Image (cartoon, rainbow, N blue to C red):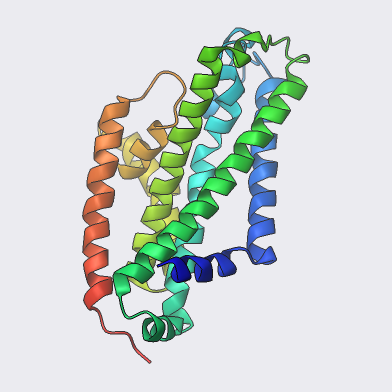
Length: 263
């Protein structure tokens, strides 16, 4: 499996993928954090879903990670696209057959690819967190935000838990992308299905049918990263995400293991 991981990492560290993805993630995180602090207290809203974020709130330990938390969904969509494309293109380019010649154990190939893409997602999330922290410290004086609470034990603990929760959410979206890649065996179909579902269909369902949000996978994955006022409980979201991901993952893993590979 180690060889599979290194082989996948070689693909993931291509400059066209690695540098462009990291640059986009860093810029988006910096932008959203900048807007949160620059427009602090704006009656039109300066936070997630138009909520008004005050200087008092940003002066709490939550203020350090707020900008990072609001881009978690975008990080998840990026992870979904990368996981889906890297998985499905093995079928598109016909390289899966060559991989199976070198490593006949299909689950080792699947596991190695997943670990490599997980490391990519960790790096992406870490860069996003660092950029958010840097911008938050730079703009804190402008927003009249006190940073003393950010470096307390509570602040450091919240920083770690926020990173862990965002990473959980990102990995959840990434896993969905890999599932779709294995299911559709086409990067375009897998990415389009995932993006349309999470960006459009889920929001329509949650808006039209009251009470459906707590049963939708994307809503639960996003809820893991909320810093305050959970839409529904963290435990509920964690359980629902595990049910969806483990169930769907088991089905597509069985398909991957038994399905014939064309020339």
